[in-house]
Image 1 (tube, one colour):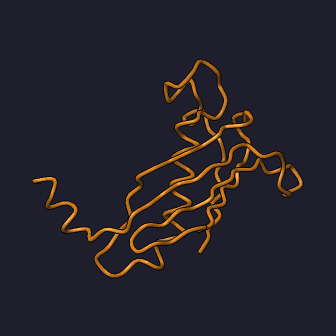
Image 2: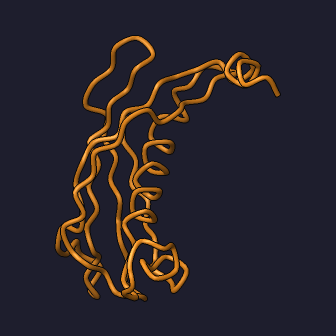
Length: 126
């Protein structure tokens, strides 16, 4: 189970814009959100009707800066499954101008748990 999503860094994705720093480069919170989106894309086709997945743990090492206008490919690959728990290895790479993978921007792991949507929301009292 895996998925790859590609994003282009915009001004709204920068550390300056998301409040995680003062530089106009890809912000770690946005990168983390993109990694989670890739795990959702990987797991969605496998979810039972009426279910969704929720993120429960994230470990991410942001290794290199990406400028506004740069393209980033996020790969999420399932590496462990145990009942409702799913663990994904995630990696992000810049995409070179010729379309080939460039430098590694980030690597880590995202854990998700499959839940029944209605039961989950009912526990919130809303």
